[in-house]
Image 1: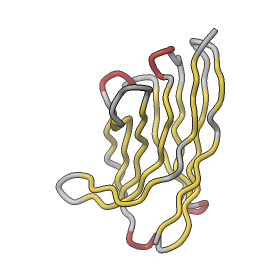
Image 2: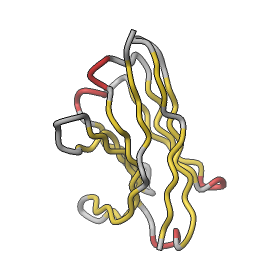
Image 3: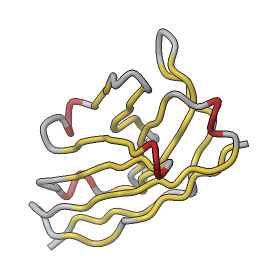
Image 4: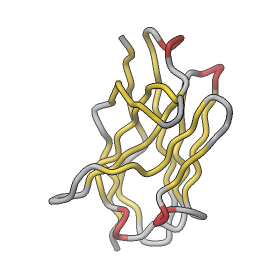
Length: 119
């Protein structure tokens, strides 16, 4: 089993920045892909960004140029740096982990952290 714990959410004004962190523990040797999803009220959960162990990254078009996914192997932590935040970025953000082989397959999920962008 793999445990994921997110942190770093909160309230930020439009144009501001936040960094989300996801600390991983457990049987992480099986993991070679990590990602962030988000779910806004009344909407389906969708991929925001993902990264594979080889460095391949994927971003949804709406966050390209504003968000950056990265990982620190020594700390078993994945980050999502979010800049130029917009009200449409308001959602619960979920960290996820799994495998990458001809596409991402995510098996493990965190509990989510709320991000609210509002003036």
